[in-house]
Length: 110
Figure (cartoon, rainbow, N blue to C red):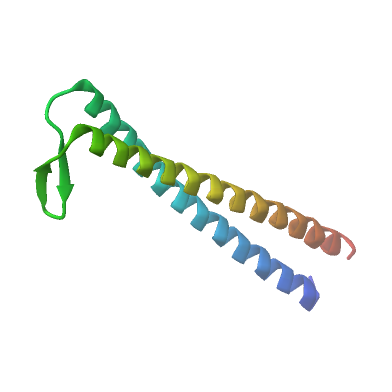
């Protein structure tokens, strides 16, 4: 089957887009994992007892309210990053879908 150069370029572009989608999925999973850790830490803080914070290789006692505030800020940042990644991922998927349709139309012309 003889494929036009333009179609070959679109196929390569589609492959690059699919790699980008995989990259976004990995980033999103990373942030979701970190978000789960922060949620877990917040729940543990609410149980009571002493609060500690890890700084580098040491653990120091921390004020519970300050630590809770810091964790909630981290949680917000992770949630925003996940939403941004999801928006970018959606746009890329739409582009991939359009490109895939174009490729299929060109392939079916033959």
